[in-house]
Amino acid sequence: MAAIFRQLIANQVAQLLHHQAKLIGNQIRIAGRNQKLFGFVLPVTNILENKQSKQATKTYQQCCEIAQDLAKQIQIDSHYIQNIIADKTFVIFKPNDQTFMTEILKNAINNNSSDSNETKKHVLVEYSSPNIAKPFHVGHLRSTIIGNFIANINNYFGNKVTRINYLGDWGVQFGLLGVGFEKFGSQELLTNNAIKHLFDVYVQTNHETTRDNNIKSQARLFAKRLEEDDEECIKLWKQFRDLSIQEYKKIYKDVIDQLQDNGKIAIDRQSEAAVVHIGKEHAFLRKEDRTTTYLSRDLVAAIDRFERYKFNEMYYVTASAQNLHFKHLFKILNSSGHEWAKNCYHIDFGMVKGMSTRTGNVVFLNDILDDAKERMLKTLSKEHHDPSSIAEQVGLAAILIQDMKAKRIKDYNFNWEKMLASRGDTGPRLQYEHARLVSIANKTQVPINTEANITSLLNESCAVNLVEHIARFETELIRAKTYSEPSFLVNYLFILSHLISIANHNLKVLGQIDEIAEARMLLFTAARNILATGLSILGIEPLNKM
Image 1 (cartoon, one colour):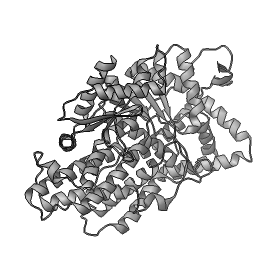
Image 2: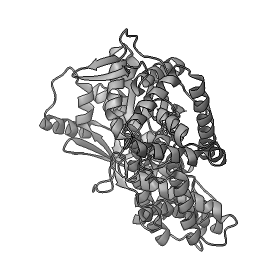
Image 3: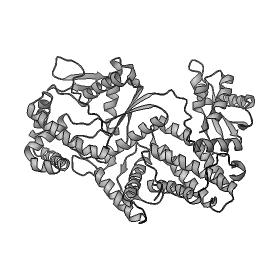
Image 4: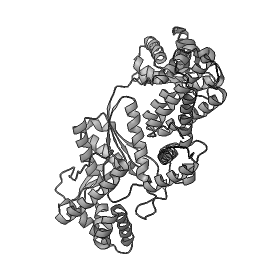
């Protein structure tokens, strides 16, 4: 969005500090809204830390002095940079207003992206990964939402992305279901409503384990028979798997495109149980009955994926309860000589409280979507030719934004009212602002003129504030990508929507002379493009009408 400014600054600083322009460019950010002076900010301390790995660390005072020297020595064409000042350990570059506004709006209009100097990568993202016979619930939804965001934002920055949805259908949990179906199952109910019946059996069997300890032993035996290719167990596994895949396909549509089955032992041991020691901790790679564990299957899967995809980075998006599991996984891979393991990351998140498939106290995705759609239908205008479809999309936006508005590591209580509220910082509000901008363009029919006289006709504070915030879009995306944190983008869009609302209230397009109307339409179109791009990265289809 503001690449030309970053490039000019980075090139000058690189010459003076004998440093790489690419690394300097990645450190330059745009001042936040709470700072008095708007401009491009160069943090001298960060630059020096990257440069002096073998040199003595600079003191705070030395960094301040270097910032002062840089501000005096740097000379950039005034067509781009109007003023350069030092503020403690920062150098602030005040852009030429006319050039700045013109560049930012034109780039936003033309959807020019991105400012990142990173080398393009092949990124694998494993997310969602539900279990056989368990309906898709909010726990899976969180993984899907965050994983989809990570995949989308990497796509935006030009990386090749492979999405992996590992369908969990093995081990003791499935053994529990197998034993339960033998006790409580019905082929008739299975045929009529497979997923509901399997879920009911799973919950009933779990309740029975509190009264009958033999059930867990039977489940472990069933899992062992499954790994030993017992014909009866395999037949039941295939039946449950096929029925579950059919149900998940309805929800995922084309997302599920592969099923991975890795039941190998990662380490060959003579003993019945295979244990790996990790410092003072230990982890099982094979149980005493010679059956596999989650850890051994993940080890095999990770090695297989690297051999198959030659990825640069791999992300596992699962709840924070899995932190120790992935700590062990990555350490074992590293100690086994797999250097690529240092580029594997566990993206954890907090839980939606009060939900567990083991007790039956769970809210399923289909229930959430249906209820959200119903509530939104009551608030929409009856003039829509397809209110059901719009209600579904607005409801989905409400759910996604509610989940991503706070930092992902935080737990939150599932709350229908907060999730589907039509006022405040919500998904429906963001959709409304986008639809309103589309409506302005349709009603006024003002053409997009990228040569419009911007600076003399967009000098109102609400217009300047909006352009400055648009300029921050790329910086905020880089921050969101670096920390795998969708809340950074969500909160950026909340501020954007407020600024759009203020500008829309003060800068009317209809009834203005051509020059003013064209300049304002350029501003609103740029804002609409940024809002639409941000929503798309979050997994939300922007609506043109509400």
